Amino acid sequence: MKRKINLLGYVLLLTFGCLFVSGGLSAQDNNALVYVIDIRNEIGSGINAYISDGIKLAEQAGADAIVFDVDTPGGRVDAAVNIIRAIQNTQIPTIAFVNRQAISAGAMISIACNQIVMTSGGTIGDSAPVNIQGQEVGEKAISYIQGTIRATAERENRNPDIAEAMVDKELVLVKLNDGQIIKLLPEEYAEREEIGEEMEILCAQGKLLTLSTQQALEYEFADAQAETLTELLAQYEIVEVAGIRLPLTEEDIMQRQREYGVSQVYRLKSLTDARVTEVRTTLADRIVFFITNPFISSLLLSLGLLGIFIEIRSPGFGVPGLIGILCVGLFFGGHMLTRIDAGWAFLLFLLGIALIALEVFVIPGFGISGILGIVMMLGSVFFVFDGAYNLRTAVLWLSTSVIMTSALAILAVFLLPETPIFQRFALSTVMDADMGYHSSSPEDFQAYLGKAGTALTPLRPAGTAKIGDKRVDVVTVGDFIPPNRRIRVVEVEGSKVFVEAVEDS
Image 1 (cartoon, one colour):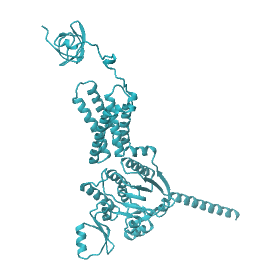
Image 2 (tube, rainbow, N blue to C red):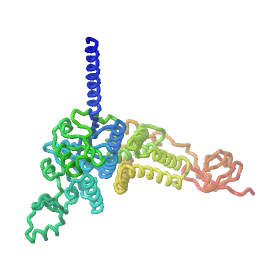
Image 3 (cartoon, helix red, strand yellow):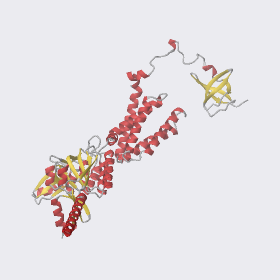
Image 4 (spheres, rainbow, N blue to C red):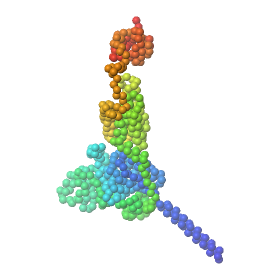
């Protein structure tokens, strides 16, 4: 009897142990993994690469959700479009946490996420494209952004008319009596107002729509409000709806169950107490963000070209050349880190410099080598700008770099020699004839004009010839002249003696 009781105790202990282990494993399996990616800088090609890398890391780790912590004044639209594509291509559920502001490109990125959660006092909107001076761009660019933001909103079942009102100030956004929010052209609004239809204007003509947190929630453009990441995660579960994984609040889950049926909505994991992994920006990331800023890129390129220009004009190799190479290296290297294939462009740039140096130091005059070198340098720079920005922006910044370089070169030629720093490195003593200095012997080279002689060395074009009983440095004005060939002096400029070949008599 006692043996039976002991056996029963072992069985119960083993059963409870299995249940405990099973429950522990189940709880561990339900512990969701969330990746957090910060968008707290101006949107550019640098942050584009950082976000793309962050999404890839989340995919490799098998993350259950990605939260984009957004607080940005905006940035370049082309970079925002690339980020939107990266977000839409991932299978991981995404949440935009508008942690104060999502303006311009930041609003477009937030709209691309499955859910938008905003803090109190947050803002989202004002996505009209502007140029580098902050002025509005043409209708063509507005139409492109308008179509992009509308398609992005429709993909996530958000009101596309609200999204369009963030881009086009010519629209009138109104709320009808039935609660529907629609956009109207000015003439459509005038017609409806004329017949007495009651409408509440949410955004008048001539203004861009920017929503506060309360307005975004009221218009159902944002999905929830939270003050911290922990509070945000506590509201969400990962749910599979019709084969698609989505982050949903309890209210949204019940709505989807009514729409699709309970059997089509599967609760997978709660994000409460989820393991959070932050994709932090490294020092290298911040350097890339800075270097790839369009203005900084143009400035680096201009300083680099200026340094190379000064180095070519002066003998030896010094500080200007070192600074020039460093600036050009930062320009190309920074863009290489943003997934732009700038390596070949850098090699092409160096080849262009080599051709220009060949034209200056070896080949007299300025011909095909110099022209080809300039074309290669400009082409390599345009390739980088075109890869980092759209075509119009690339042309704009390339032109800015050329103008800036030209202006700096002119200043360097006329003003740099007068600066105290330059005079410390330059010889300021004038060695003229009055002080007893002579650049050459007082020989009268004009006496050689018309005289004949013999080439002692190959003249290609410079060399040495014997004229009378003297050895004279000469330059040919025609083709190559081999040694021992008869020559005649045809022109004299100072100490330069120009000769041509003559037939032996």
